[in-house]
Image (cartoon, helix red, strand yellow):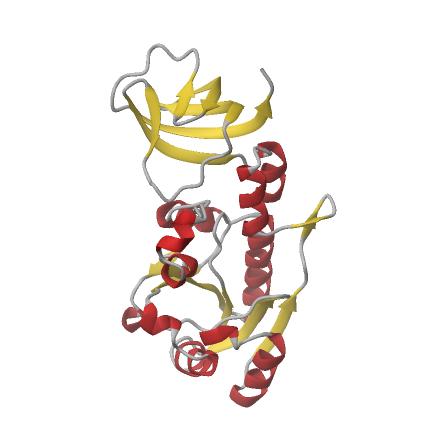
Length: 262
């Protein structure tokens, strides 16, 4: 997967099939859209492109208020990139999101970025996705711009698992309620936190990562290239049982498999 973090350094690709979004968590619906992009790209002799943003727009638009409301992310930028690469995305354009970018109108975004820079051939837009200043750009408006600038537009339908709509917001709500198994079904993988072992507890490497609700969870822990199943207790911190060999500073990945009652 090619990654570009500076629009001025973008390498134009042939017949770009594009979508836009934060893609926090890279859940089942995200990966289904990427699969669709790749199928269109293969049929049209092009390449798949995702435009995403760093930091997450909500963290810029709401600032400290987002943290006060306990808004946290499912994936860091690096984790998101790794998940997108594993999903088969061909090109990631990760645009810096700040106040100036937030003020960019949807029409300028389409004209200056999608058309002039990316030379978009086909645009795939989520069924309820809006973008641009004041969320001016929805599906109907994108269709109109597609006719004006000469690219196809496709609306991706709502994606459900077990009858439940899949979204990053819903995954966050489930994790914050301690419903890890249900969240994992929407993600399509076991939710994880990367971190280190410090002072007899697991410390997340990033302060922006969402932590499941206080409780006990069955976990799969990767440390020193090996895997171990154990119970994690979340209260003020994250404590792991039955891993006496852990040393200060050990790098770890903790996957939360399901909630358990003790």
